Image (cartoon, one colour):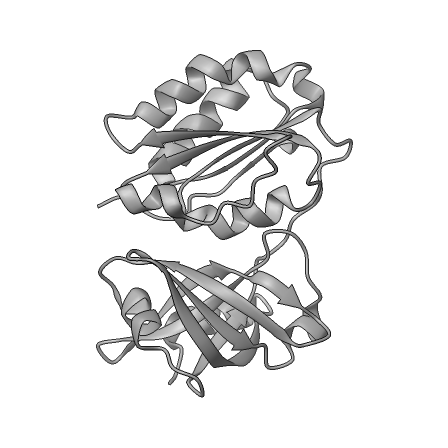
Length: 239
């Protein structure tokens, strides 16, 4: 399958192509699926870092469609990783539902990157939802004993059963239903008292694009956090 104009653009930006092979899959909840892969040489060639993601290529009615997914439990020595899919209508979710051992999928690595905050904050502040769950778990794994407050937006009852890798002694989880901008309101009401020194804070945001933009603007313009202490990325667009 060709990658169309998006593939050409990624090549211009030195994107590297790989092929991954499915080794198995498991249904985590009714709306969440984990697929296991061999890496086609990716991890040895690129290395790994927290929240690392790659662009998978899916067939969408005969046209190439790319979506970015975070690697789960990458193992350089074994050359394996998993990917978790928050299921909804769409070609990526449909592909994950059908995935069987031996299936091959193409992917491109371009744009991934993460710098561990230096200095580490006293408390990490994390805002996300099921789409960014793998990245949240990866981020929390950077320093498992570092205190963290996690706002996690839910849309379905089964979202409460998702595998957040929390350390109960150090991690404070706040689930917020996706309704009437409740996540934004809750963050604005509670985050300021948790920041401490703005220059030493670290806030990570990965929600839908509009929520991410709103909260990022709030942090930078109203709370005056330095830009380098905020890591924000819109993971999806609300319909």
